[in-house]
Image 1: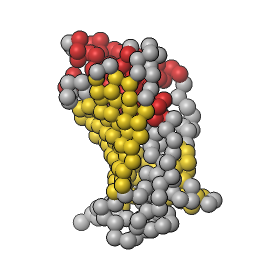
Image 2 (image 1 turned 45 degrees about the vertical axis):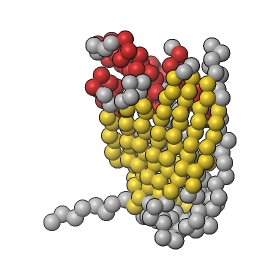
Image 3 (image 1 turned 120 degrees about the vertical axis):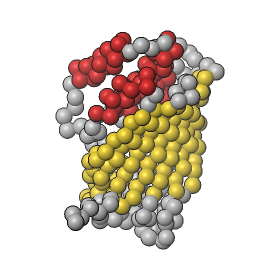
Length: 252
């Protein structure tokens, strides 16, 4: 299916992106993460062909541990929210039930840039992915969808399955120590059928609560990916926010 090729091509293109060295943070020239746990929230917004959106937000509790000359980021998922149009409710339910155990731990270099993310402790067998794909196909088969709705649902299911494997959207290398500002990259992928398109990737970082400290009370990064192909345009937005982990509520 052509939409599947689009998703796969974006994934390959983004994995192949060169890592740009970020300038030192304006808050502090040296990366000094906090000892206290932090709350990391990642929101993924995918625009659908009919103008509606599917939005998935995952929340993690993370902490930075010194390791060699760099750092290790340990984390666990502590919450998830998924919203989607009614025809895609079943797919949203599948994504809501998925627990991300692949993103952490991460290895950072001395500057705080992501070097690598850990592979799953025990990679899922091929049948696991096949079973999930079949579950999606069964849901689509039972749903009362128009041809246009079914096409959209199939496209979103491919995107969700890719995102679930963390294959389509690798995290920015400078997520934890990006200098405020934006950068843009333009790719020109060619699909297997010879169709050409362009992928524009804009990444912007901000420290709205920066007051001169080494690790500001809030960091935010946003990445927008716009894909144009054959007269159509698709847009995906990712937003990462890092804030101190709220203290546990005390029993009265």
